[in-house]
Length: 540
Image (tube, rainbow, N blue to C red; front, side):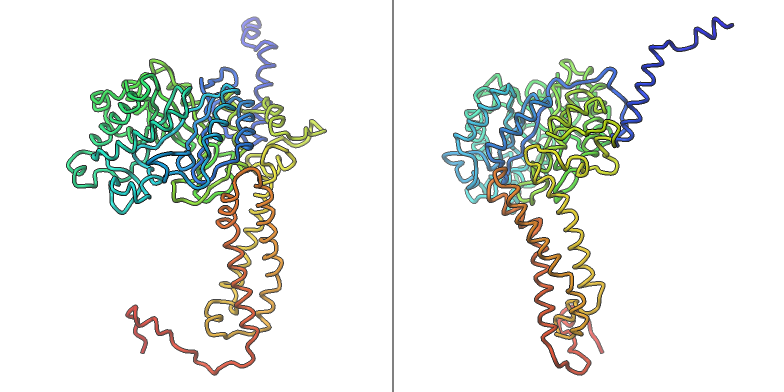
């Protein structure tokens, strides 16, 4: 019995492993790392880890682009997915598509040469169906819109649509002679089957035929180029129809989910369907630009969980494909579409990029990657090894507290986001208090110049401090972005994020000046609102 009891006892090595595993788990809990099945023993590392650069309307400077490429390479990136949109130097009939601050031919070649020297695979992305706003907004191409009043998607039944697509492909492919892949977009085709010709056919038929036509154009241009498309429009198409369209020989789907629960959006039967049709597939997570159109800094905790969940899914699903999964793209959207305002700028998302690239390049993220994480962000090493954890994603999901002293490219703007967070909250609270919660600086008071100057004076005591805090923030933002993005982007970001508060605070100042300048007030009642009548509101 004693011998049997002894056989049940773990060996010293097993005890040590368990203690080490427990230590890592406890540390992970302290770090706030989302709990996902621990893959550190047998990690799944995607073959390719691609960083998505969304350039539309907000290009990083070439110098900054190069710094981020080098940083991404150092933490495991194997390639770039470059979505130029209106930042590409189009020529000829496509010249109107280029923004006035688009990259020049020389600048694009400089980027591509630098990527080549780093041995980073470059995959250009061209939208060819939905999200064609950058082209269809122009008068020259309005005739190929699916819906005349909307530039979101082109009509797949017009020959002129393929003239545009062919020219886009020719120019972009010519600029990328060494690229092995081309991404043709095809996600979120919100307007399809609307025109007189298209409405005669099923959406599935329209979509599949369009992908076939675009793929054929690519193959005519460069037969060996592998074609990638976003997968969302394929999810509800049967495997029989996908196979009948020969899609498996034409394109490779890139499955994108930016939320934490991957299987909620792409269930196992969809994976089985893809594996039956396609020899391989790609996946796409996010390091920024996924959790809100107007965010100014990413929630690193949520993005890390998204990426770690993807590793879990990929380790399971990769083997069902004949050629396994191609890799993962970490997307970094700059706008939700061509017309949307800016979301998180690249400098504010560098810590999230490094965190998630380390996770996907190692197959896990835990305390063992501390030194790599801190050194690549150029952070000072804590003097006391027993000090607080190097991350606190639970309490500090944007990593402001822990990375405030790091000197990575764009760190000044990253730190400024914490100031913005605090000053914005203070301004919101002040504006709300002064104009809504208190009864002397409302729009009604201002309209009739009817208020008590003493109360108005009390309500505006903090106004200069709040206002000058905003002005100072705007100046610091311009300084911290200088050299990272172009001047148009700096101006746009300040106008969207800070200037509206400056305007609101100036309005309060003007209202208060007018109200304090009144010495005599009329007897009540004040005039009745005549505009009520046009709304059919009868009084008396």
